[in-house]
Image 1 (cartoon, rainbow, N blue to C red):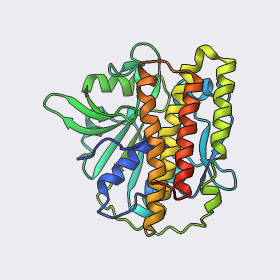
Image 2: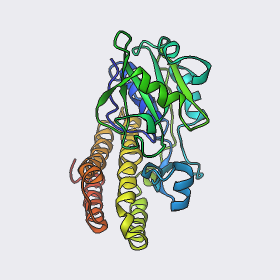
Image 3: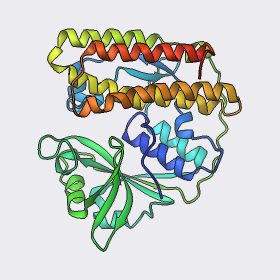
Length: 317
């Protein structure tokens, strides 16, 4: 049975494709959902608060200043090119349906949650387990893990929570069909013909892979936001948390996948990925329960970078 993602991958939909491939992969196979992004490099991009409000409805998930870019400046995203790659190299059949063309039950019956899967677009305003419940509309995606027709309950995987939870059919139906968002997309993924035909070659720029310039820019960003909006540092702190967890840590895990044939480099990049993942873990309670000032966060980032540099220099793993 499919399980929750061990890491996030760019956004909720990317995280679900990551965990679907982890479920399907045979021992020793590379996770191509990660490899798709290994051809890029970590880069800082300045993001305005107004841009976040427009694109992400003020959700701090939208405030992630570090992204994965190609050498030509193309921002790599979970998009049509990514879906085409999944279909071409893994024989996944990905169909995007409009939920309003059928009932919730009809859609659920198309998946067995083992070789076929459903990712629903939802409005979290209608989900009781969401922080947005009855407060604010927020577009999100949920992956169905299990369907209990007798009790009319769904077990769903939420990329932003480290556990699964149950949702009544009636509640899920409201989150899908009563959504304020125009597009009510359902991703129907048929993996019954899954095969790993991945044959990726990279022009590896080690200097670019190992560049930490984005860190200085991120620290400057933290100080700037704290100076401009000290009362909103909690908001930006959440954005940085998601940035470490969904962009920076996955990128280094992707690099480790590239070097599956080189034990030393694979271990090196895995160790670096774990450092960033551990930083995000240490931020979790702060994000959801407490408050921490900007300088404290900067100190944690700087200590993480010191460890990363030592790993790059071969001083420790």
